[in-house]
Image 1 (cartoon, rainbow, N blue to C red):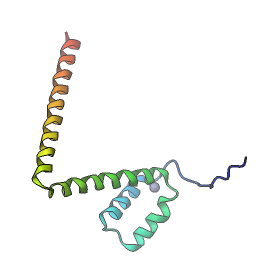
Image 2 (cartoon, protein in one colour):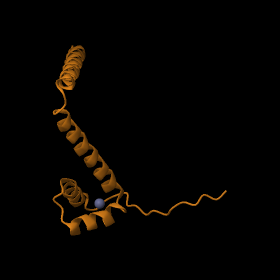
Image 3 (cartoon, rainbow, N blue to C red):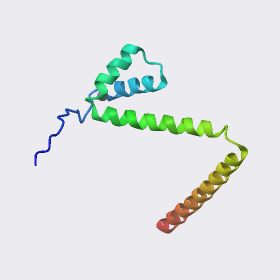
Image 4 (tube, rainbow, N blue to C red):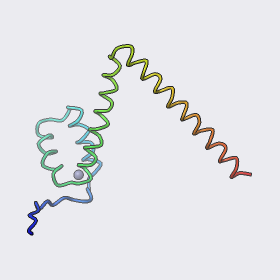
Length: 108
Ligand SMILES: [Zn+2]
């Protein structure tokens, strides 16, 4: 059985990742010029670490956007969110206490 695979040449390492990330930020912020967006599109296809960086930045931005949008939701959702945050803080407090206990055990 032949398995025709699309030949994709992607760089595993980006020699100017810092610059790429700045470009990604600009594109996601919407502050990039059409030229920059064009350059970004042609570059992102061949640069694996930058694709991953782009996907990550995009998901973070979308997550933040969802959070902001949630603020406009009815009071019930806000209350639910508060409860959730409270529970998270409670668990977090538990973890901190646990770490302190572990530290105490190791120090003694
Ligand atoms: Zn790159």
